[in-house]
Amino acid sequence: MEFYLENGNTGERLPLQPNDRATYEPENLGFTESRSYAEVEYGFFGVTQHSFAQPNLSGVILFWDGDEGQQYKAYREFVDWVQKIDSLQIVYIPYPGSEELYMDVVLDELGIPNPILYGPLECPVTFTGTSPYHKKNPLTFLFQTDSTVNPMRFTFKFPFKFSDSGAGDAQVFT
Image (cartoon, rainbow, N blue to C red; front, side, top):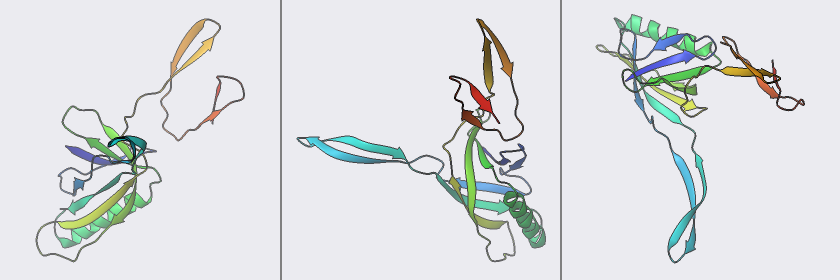
């Protein structure tokens, strides 16, 4: 199992699997669906409403790097890195060779414990998901002129938006 924090705009990653710097011990990686039921007839119930609940990932980040001073320095660098990002994602790779799963998140809390003499600095962390898990797929846009289709591939390294156009099936890129 591998975890990374990724800057969604630049692709820069911060590893969170066991290494010299930090390790993430996650909880609540699954999903929750809230449902409402109504009695249909004779003790049978049907689902009347269902929706996915907002993901709430928690866990502990361990800062391993050297002595206490180095651990707090790694903690500060981690906080500085996260604070400068406006599009944060958790990258989850369940097993070697599997597809990478992405979840857009915001860091809600990163606690700082009392100093300890030996071992890593253990910091409780809470992320709130703003999307379900998803994959990053390359985008292919097909531009059609008359009866020929001209496939063009674009790799975007910057934020972009789609907006509906008043011209039928056309899309306006900004």
